[in-house]
Length: 228
Image (cartoon, rainbow, N blue to C red; front, side, top):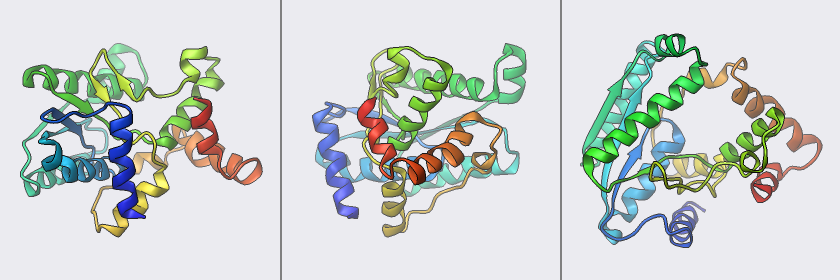
């Protein structure tokens, strides 16, 4: 099954024209299981496709020592794989207050701004993020509850041309990603904020989707991805 994820990953990248030989790719790595697996899979294709990989990490400074630990962990991970590493840090909570937006919106905007700057500095580098099928299902439900139109209900795009972002793991469920990490002995960090239910996406992840799986459709994530 673990080898199967790599083959499916490569097939998905080919079908969606996400990577080409000789390309540069900035891999956004938070330290969580999804991004660690993304880095591992791209690293395994590195020689075959002559990829130039660079690891990028944004420290939101929202969880004190835990945030510092995440940055140090990703830095060590990049060094172990012999990859260049770049990081930036910002007091996200203070930025959110100044901009009068939620912390989640501020965090996303700051992260993408950072990744976009790194991409431009490096030239034609693409940006790879570790969004998966569960993220896509959660996004669709979140947008549905907000009353979004057709574009919102299409979920997370596999390619975002305005920022040159690719999402090569969008086909894979979180459980398959976690199984791969365990089988390959990949170490990763756990974000304690993911357990806080006052964040709307966490509420959908921890409460709504599991309820839909138990009550309506055990394959709800796949069904929502087909709908998107």
